[in-house]
Image 1 (tube, rainbow, N blue to C red):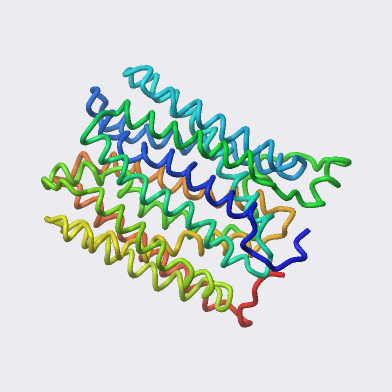
Image 2: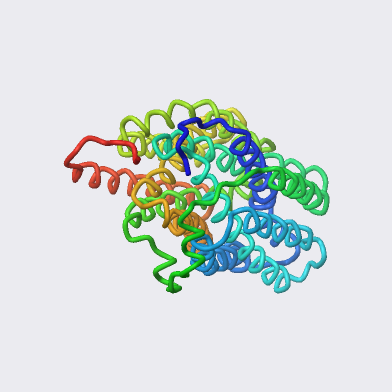
Length: 396
């Protein structure tokens, strides 16, 4: 399937671009939904639920998608997810009733769980196994830049224009993603065609969890729990502090994540995930405290740049770590578990911090609380590092 060690093929480039537009379309909305829900009369609990219901839906659907990936060609699954995301994105301006928006958000979560799982697995199929760290690092860059750059654009549009315009631009980006996916030549592993002759039995929990990859998935959960406070409360924090440049945090985050990615991807393939993740968790911890103390746009830029190197480098390293622990056949399930860990981390963070928010005076306290999760990431990664008996070798 992957006899060539060539990484930069046209299918891989099209997939990266399409995935970038997919994540940009989604991430433009993410930081603006909490303040939008507040603006139409939503409670603090409903602000948390807008993220939590989405994450719950994405997690539920992923085991089914992971099982489908064992028996179905990639392209039809990728396009189904992309079209579903486009439809759900376009529905947000239809109503201002919070309960209806929660229902839309739940269905959107199903589409998101579908799309992220199949896109990530399609990338694994296109990347040479021995270059999984580098290849998934670049694929992760399309994820991270979308997670980091698009919110800054979304915040700018929401603060200076309207929520409706924000949604229509996000919908247009989703349409571009569909075109690019349509032009992509996907690779389907031989094992998928063999499984079509004798389909494996479906098990919800067997397709939800890849046992070999559960430790890095746990680390991913803690990592994104820490990031959840930024997603949910950065705009609200900026309003409290009177900062007009909250988008600058995301922008410089994206710039530094992009610059550092080629270096960190190659480092992963040569040395493994442990030292890289430990170093980046320390940077993320410091960046969260700098953000909590920010009282100027310059502070936001510095915090964003440091967070871009830290968190921005950790996410693809964690995905490559998850994939490196399993087989090609079960890479779809491992990918689904990785993305479920992200959604569970962000969703749990929104719910827990939504509760804590009622008892603190400023959102800066939430950032400080969340920073402790990066210390937990450091600790757990160090424990696994101590267990290693042999030097790291890239998966074959």
